[in-house]
Amino acid sequence: MNCENIKNIIITDLIDGELSQPQEAVVKQHLENCAACRQYLNDVKKSIVEPFQNVPSQKLPEGLWLNIKTAIESQPKEPVFNPLGVFTRLLRLPRSIFTLSTSLAILLIGLVLIKSPNFFINLENRQLAKEYLEEQIDFLTPENGSTKNNDAINLHTDIEKFLL
Amino acid sequence: MRDISQEIISQAAQGDISAFEEIYKNTSAFVYNVAWRMLHSREDAQEISQDVFITVFKKLKSFRFESSLKTWLYRITVNLSINYLKKSNKERNKNIPFDDAIKNPEIEEKLQVNQKIDFDTDQEKLLNDLLECLNPDQKACIVLRNIEGLSYQEIADSLKININTVRSRLKRARDIMKSHKNISMNLKQQ
Image 1 (cartoon, rainbow over the protein chains, first blue to last red):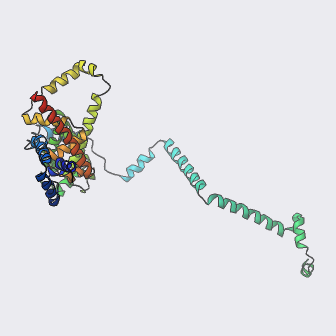
Image 2 (image 1 turned 90 degrees about the horizontal axis):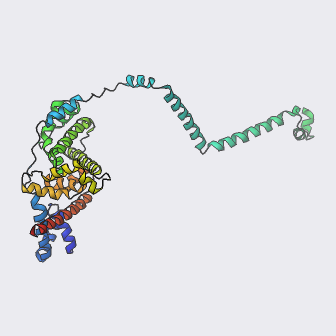
Image 3 (image 1 turned 135 degrees about the vertical axis):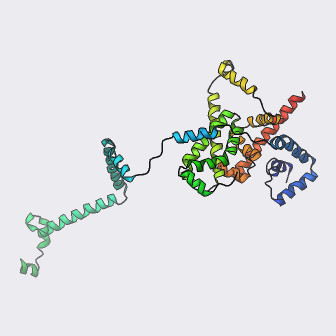
């Protein structure tokens, strides 16, 4: 480890006692052989560590608890949860809120339907099914005058002669 | 701080004021101390301490015992103090040109009051000088480490930051304090 790394460790983990024993041993070995880093450690101890040693605690100001207690007691108490109360409060809401929420719900349903990947495919299938059914009805009802259907029926077979 | 039983916390969460007083008695010293070191004003520290305990009383119901009460209290105290510092710095720097600020009698009076602060000891004055050259985040790390004696992990938990962020904030803060001390020593020698 070079001096720059050692100095970074000195100013943080070493003076705060955050190093593991093997890490501390490496740093101490470096310090034994490096006068510059030893000097740096002394400077750090003098300028940063010593001013914070044995700092007295500040005395609590008188009346602090009384102020807190008064502030707590003067605050409005939270209402107890009442599901019926929630329902009645909902009923008291202005009508515009209900109108708005219903409109939003309809819009949302519309969006979901349109955005659904199967929506247009289903629509197309329905169209095809409708056309197919119409053709079948056309085919089965010759009285509607479709020539195409008559041709289809008149195949001059024995069975036709028998049936018709 | 003595250990506070879960029962006392639960009673206080139900609105029992005497149980809450028990919590106050056990924790108010370090709450006030941290606020005082962060803000260096008795009035501001008192105001923040009041806010801390009112907030705790309100939110005690949602306390899930995932962290210790002490860690939670440190977090609230530091956050409220940092917000207060940032807000007051913003107010102070609200586009007032320096010359005009000096001419403003209200600000001039405040500056004179600050200069006349009667520090109990030389150590207090030195501590104030050192802490005042740090930004609020760095100051919080130094106060929790050097004054409250919290480990890096405890600071990380209290401030909800990464342990390496704690390390880098401490390093930066100490570099600043070290150079500040060197400058002031050089000035004294001249």
